[in-house]
Each structure stands twice: as structure tokens, then as C-alpha cells.
Image (cartoon, rainbow, N blue to C red):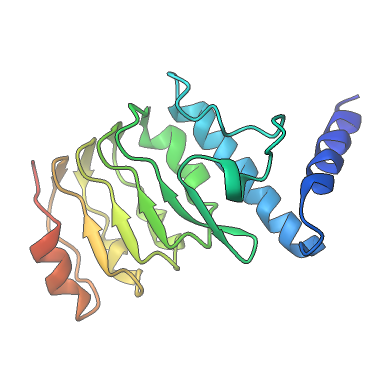
Length: 184
């Protein structure tokens, strides 16, 4: 029964995709969608992300889901600011880390808490990261230094501690000047 429901869900989803989507693109987008739905269930008790569902007539997440942008059939931008989203990092970051083509991540001005996971470095395409005005705590992961494409980093107004990781030049100075205020 469970397999039948999964097959029906996937078949319905694939029928809604434009003909230009290849099977590989659909598979990648499908895993991005699963990650986003896990994030929604972990962090949105107030229902601000109600557009994130596949049962509506506009089920293409790239065109109808709040805060998303896509390129080549993958989620590349996730901007969810000031939505009263709330969760500990342990409950929502694992799903975000599955979005391996993410270039922009902005979760500022919400109520996220807990440590920033060291494996944030798996988001290798990340160029802009805005996590300010939350309640993140603990040390800033040294793994930020391996995000070679990172241009902007805003961790201000959290409860973070420790040294700012060495970022690849010329990004290091910009990140320090523009963004990182520890302890808020």
C-alpha cells in the first residue's frame, strides 16, 4: 500500500512537470522537494509555508513556492526572512544540507536556535549566507573556510562565539566588515 501511494505521488508530480524536464532533472528536483518538505515540517508551526505542497494546481515548486528560485531544475535560492519560522538547528539543518545546488540561503529574522552544523561546508555552491537575527549559538564552524564561493556571510545578532574562520580572500575582509558581529 505504501509503495502504491509513493508511486502515485511521484507519477502525479512528474506529470505536472514541463516536458523539457529530463528524468535526471526530475529526480534531482524531487529530492530537493523532499528536503524542503522536511524543512517545512520541522520549522513552520504557524503555516507560513502553506504554498509548499504538491496537491495544489500550481504544484511546480520553482514557480509557486514562497522563497524559492530554481536554475536547471534545481533549487538554487532559498530566502525565508521574517516568517516566524522556529526550530533547533538539529531538526532543520539536515534537510537544508541536502540542497547541494543552493547558491543563496537567507533565514534571517526568524527564531532558529542551536549550533550551526560543521557540515554546512557541504553547500559548496553557496555564495550568499544570511543567518542574522536568530538565536544560533555555539562556535562558528571552521568549515566556513572551505566554502570557496562564499561572497557574503551574515551571522550577526545571534549568540555565536569564537573566532571568525579564515575565509578565502578577497571574501574574508568583506565578510568581516559587512556581516559578522558576534554576540549581537
